[in-house]
Amino acid sequence: MGQHQHLYNKAAWRKLRGSVLSAAPLCRMCLEQGRTTAATVVDLITAHRGDLDLFHDPENLQPLCKPCHDRHAQRRDKGGDVRAIGVDGWPVGGIAISKPRNDPFAGIRWMEPATIPLTIVCGAPASGKSTWVRDNAEHDALIICMDTIAARMFGQRAYRIRDDKQWVAARQERNNMLRWIMRPSARKKWSRAYYIATMPTAEERAAITEQLKPDRVVIIAPGQEECMRRAMADKQAGDARTAHSMDAIRRWYHLYRPRAGEEVIGPDQQSQVS
Ligand SMILES: [Zn+2]
Image (cartoon, rainbow, N blue to C red; front, side, top):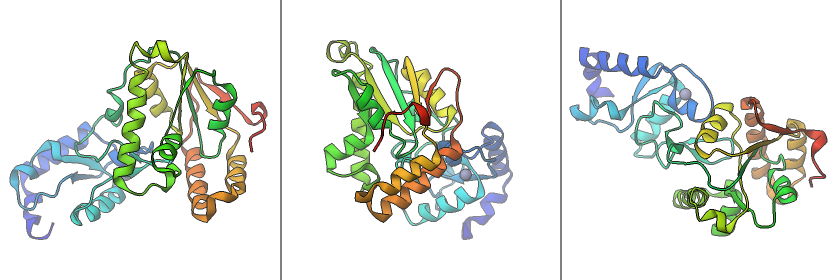
């Protein structure tokens, strides 16, 4: 801010700030990760560097809580991009947060109802989502899974991808696969699709259900302790993976809320998962 501090005291800014916070009272970055936190700061997405049009452009403003704002400002002022990281270790909310979103699910509004039956399978890391799909999927089913996509495209687990271009490409591929099942031609190829994702929050699952219209939403929930036990037992993964998983598992169970109409596969209903 520094030399531009005087801009923030102007009546025009105060008015703009007030209208942003009353229209969108929650921190956008927290929302994108499923947390509801009051916004206290109106943040400039792109640094204005004295450009008054940019400074007063409502499209360049976003409501944030103080911690998110400070994190963002630091990265923005170093010229970096700003992304929130979801429980699956993947950046959430689009390639970059380039536009303010009063709608935290703006990034999925392009999705349309699947033309074939669709099962969405959610759960914490190491909950056994892929195993459940393997055990239950029809032989001609399409399986949409970021981990599988990352493995196929880059030969590594999704969580290991740190290269921005790679995760953008993997995400695009995932979205392409979702587009396949929105087309009528999908009926000729697959009897059903399975979309595997972590999606702990009821809001996120409600939003995606609204768009894709799955006929089943299955939550694989063996319990936090069991997920952690499995993540620890995954010797191949290494310490970094284990630490990442523990954190992601904790966050998933912290954020998880059940939702009417979903099937929950609890500890007793799972077949042996290694
Ligand atoms: Zn926040």
